[in-house]
Image 1 (cartoon, helix red, strand yellow):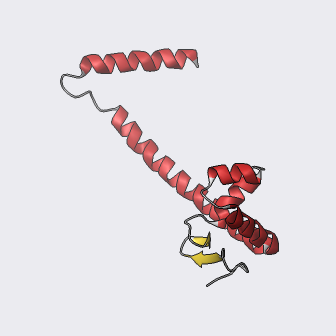
Image 2 (cartoon, rainbow, N blue to C red):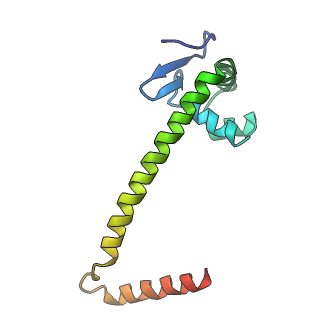
Length: 124
């Protein structure tokens, strides 16, 4: 389904959401840069887009601002939920790993690592 008006570059809806045709870059990726107030030149440096593709994306965002902003907020909410899930899951696993004794033959390395961690903690 083509949503954009440009014949060369269009915005299409994929399983990832609103995407710039011919790329894996979503409108939400562009919105991240707009929210950070990055210039078009900087966005082109960060994302592998042509100037025409970026202009089409910006035009689509401006034309459909309400819809795009609502979807973008949902994307941000989902990304935060996923981040929190993995942070919590990894926290438990890392705590479990921290209680494990060093492998045989690595005791001296373990002591060195603990000394470096203590030194780093003092400096912070």
